[in-house]
Length: 156
Image (cartoon, rainbow, N blue to C red; front, side, top):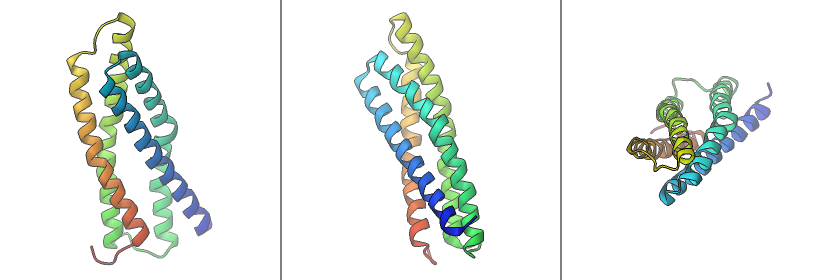
């Protein structure tokens, strides 16, 4: 694949990944602050759908196009900025995987609470705290990956 086309796909998928992740996090965070069970359920349902339809493919495309760009661009996987970027990418992914699992469980708990007219269980709010913590750790890692990919610093 042509370098510029590969770079375009990489940037486009980064935009989808970052935008969907940030938007979903904001909507879920705000729904949780309002504590409206029906609103939380609807938001969680849409966030889970967005993760499967947009975020997951973008995560995969990012890795594949990034590896292709390294190879085609004449860079070495041992370059410090690439190793650092990959490490942070994997770290963000390690935060994101449990977040996806939690979002599914949180959606299901919100659906059950909504349908039964009950409050959300304490387990929901414990997951919400971990969801926030993990997202707060992943976000700066992704921002740093963006920095590394744009500036490609020789010395970190």
